[in-house]
Image (cartoon, rainbow, N blue to C red; front, top):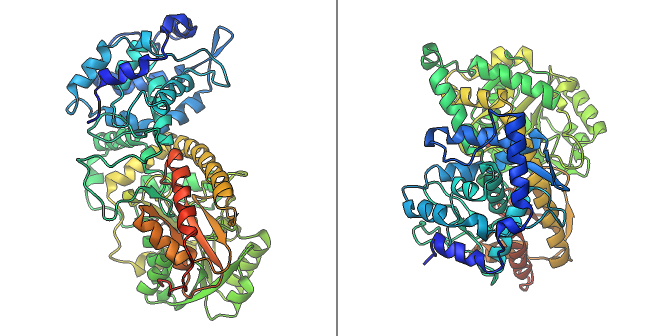
Length: 582
Ligand SMILES: Cc1ncc(COP(=O)(O)O)c(C=O)c1O
């Protein structure tokens, strides 16, 4: 049985010193005094906010996070606070619904003298910010077993009151520990400890429906960090548009998408992806797959029946083209991306290409190949269809501009929020060459855009700067996680060679010839680890053995045990390779 908050409190107590004995109390008081002086309207006071004002209180608390420097406090950059807040939204959303499950939890938490129990510690060891120190204290308590797996932590508001700090400090610390896998947050439930020091993975909670087979660790590609979905801000955007949409918006939707979102997407693509996009050339659709089906229908209506896709590649793109009645040619990819010379030997007049980050090899189409590909399109009077599915995540330098800007008359640009927010939203876009816009609409007369309120919510989310803030926070989180995965693979799977690390949410792990990767994927699945074989993305098997490892939907703390499991499955004796799934 998980212990109660009382147990949580006593678990922490063992190495706790009175808060007032550290200089943290002084720091908090200094900050509060200073905030009140500088910004009396936004400073938090140690009172219990009314439920209705909680969200607002959290918002105003964001810029007030402080850095302690030799007894003085400096406000951190507000953009950093904003980004970090995004990462904690899952916690906040969960807490909004905590009360029904644990009314005693909140009471017990506030009745506990947390301010005298928590040893947040002085600013040391590179941890100057209060939320870092709080996270450190909680992490230590969990690692040392003083907080047991399943224990509920207090609601952030209650703990913030006890500590005399802003609620943002607590939600930020919780958010960090959720990302690391020490805590878990679920709607309708308290935030709980999700890790135990004996190395055994967290057990699924009894009331959770069992999955078949249960997935303990997800190292398959495809999903972003679903725990970090910006719930509060998305809910704010939905609420805002539900209240502000004019009644005409609730009538028959424009099949090409609501003009407000088309305008917002065009602006976003121009400023962040270097695209040549305008509200008239943008169509809103349900994602890249939907956009590709629409594009292929339009190409077919224009007499183009042969289309090329990259090999290896994502099978759904091939399926989308087949669905639209096109013949599909697979063209190989090498270290510079799509082999344009090989493409030119086919009868294709259109090609789908992941120019910024090819899936699954992770290569970027080289500048020379980009120029060559555009020349090819002009020569065959054809089109390039650019799948810009995860280009926002680039870690070595700024995201590479889209190819579409090189020749907007020959390149279609397809994108979605499936990798940046969630595939569950079903929102994406398609930028078509001006000459093709009419053909595109005519060829898809029954196409429907996603629900209008969702479209308007996305426009609000982007226009208010929340999308950019979310991307900045996500980029930082993914870079840290990718580095951890690479380090852990280096020590545990030394026979592997890692590639495709510069961008996206997955990497490639090349393995020695003869490695039974199919068997490893099956054995891993039976042990609760989801993996993908590179052969899953090929139409015919290859002797080159590799796994495609995604790190979007796994926590930092799950990476070491997941890689240990992966290494163990790779040590199994090799068997003859079986036929891959096409
Ligand atoms: C290569 C590739 N393109 C596009 C997408 C996104 O597709 P959609 O927007 O239809 O979810 C994915 C998602 O996994 C992908 O792997």
